[in-house]
Each structure stands twice: as structure tokens, then as C-alpha cells.
Length: 365
Image (cartoon, rainbow, N blue to C red; front, side, top):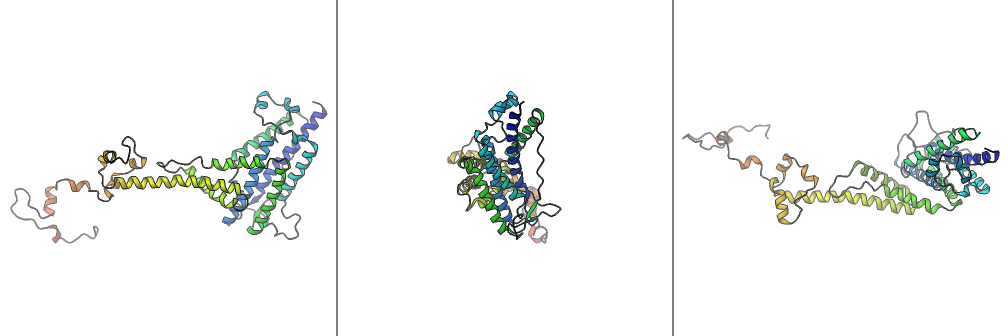
């Protein structure tokens, strides 16, 4: 391959490496060991910015090769490769993007580098022992995994077919939150930098639409009204509650989508509880053996299928329902039982001392 092609590939690799390091720079920020709720909210906001960058890179085809270099790929890889936006290979655009990415990397890797007051960002060096890693509640983690695989593949192509050395891995200091108010302003500053990068190629609206779809996907585990909410649905509701707090006042469209998705999940859970209560009330005065028949006669339920709630009822549960006679009360009393009640047994002419004259058992009391 000629020098021109190698230089072209080098430009692709430099931009891809900068973008990859930009994504990984978000992992330099950690929550404190105190696990404050406000910290989770601000880290969620930082996670949203990481998600926006992930979607931007996916749409732009940052890790894909331009048409002039696709001969380096196998036919199978060419078919599955995300088309590369030709603007990425414009010299002026590429230099501008590289500068914006370097700015984000510097901000997240050296937040206090240019500040005379080390407390302006609300961050301090991470103590040895570590804190909780940055949460990414908004981003699809499989997307990040796919990006890492795509970047690794691009490096393999460079090592095997082009005389280009692998770029060195970014090694940066890790930081921990110690002042949530100041850190909130730091997150706002990072958001402005990401906004500038996304608007440079005017695909901000497209990125937002895809992110809205990611949030909607958190509601795909909604349970039906007759089923118990799945663990995945409960987990998604917790994520959505955090997203609602994180998007309030900063991301109006994301807030609206997160709230609607949460309401739909919550509605499914509420319907389940309402249905269980109605079924429970319907069965209160009914014998279990005739429950389906009685419901059919009253026209309040379908006799062929009953909710799983009914099948889970145990014998003890039936006996505790209000108005329900216990099995023992419908059977004739045994001779011993009649003795305890002071009744005459067959063949006996003498009354038996009533049981009430005996001292009461403290256990039964």
C-alpha cells in the first residue's frame, strides 16, 4: 500500500483513538464512599453525556473506513460496517473535531489543571482503595461493548496491513466527588463541550431521537395486569426514577420520555394489584371447589382461565378468607369431641362433665 493510503489510514486511526479516549475519559470520575443520592444524579447526567457521544460515534461511523480504504476489510466486514460520514475525512472538519475531543479528554482527565482554586470542580484525586465506578444509567452498555470491539478491530487492521504503530493507552488520574454543588457546575460545563461537538456536524436532533428510544426500551419489561412484575421491570423502574431526577431542568425531551415510560411501568404494576384485589374480593364468600362455576354464573369472569393469583392460593389461605367455614366445622363431631362438649354418647345414660369446667390452656390463650 502506498504512502498516501497509509497517511489516510493514519488520519482515520488518530480520530478513532481520540474518540475512544474521549469515551473512556468519563470513567475517570467516581462517586465518593458516602454514596450520596445527589452524587448519583450528577453521575447519571455525566452518563447521559457519554451516551450522547456513543450514539454520535455510531451514527458517524467513526470506527469505519472510508470507501477508499475498504479494500483492507474482508467482504463480510464491509457488509456489516457502519457507513462512514464523509465529513470526518475533510481536513478542516477533522482538525476541529480533534480539538473538541482533546478538550473533553483534558476536562475529564485533569479537571483542576487550570484552576487556581482546587475546589472549583468539586473533585479531588481518588484515594487508594477505590470508589464506585461511574454509573451509566442512560447508555446501552452493549453499545459501549460493540464500540470497544470495533476499535480493537480497527487497530488489528492497522497492525496487520498498514505499517502503523498502535497508539498508546490513555493513562489519567482518577477523581472522586467531594462537593456536589460545584461538581454540578462541572457537569454543566462538560455538557456544553459535548453540545459543541454534536452541533459541529448538525446531528444533535438525531442523537436525541435515538437516546429517547433507549429510554423507551427501559419499559419493554412491563408486566401484564395478571402477572407479577419481573425483576427486570423493577430494576428498570429504579433506573427511570434516577433518570427523571437527572433530566429535570436540563433535558426536557428526555425527562418527558422517562416520565411516560415510568408511568406505563407503574400503571402495569398498579393494574396487577387492582386485579388481585378484585379477584380476592370475588372469591371471599365462595367455596374453592365452586369458585369458577360461581364466577361464570355471575358473569364477572371467564371460567376457562383464571389468573395465576388463584392457583397460588394455599389451603390455609382459603380457610382464612372472611365468611369461609373451616373444613372441620362441616364434618360431624367425633364421639370424643361430643364428650368434650358435654353431649351424650350413644349407649351412655350419664352426662359427661363439660369441658368448660377444665382450666384453660395458656398456650391456646
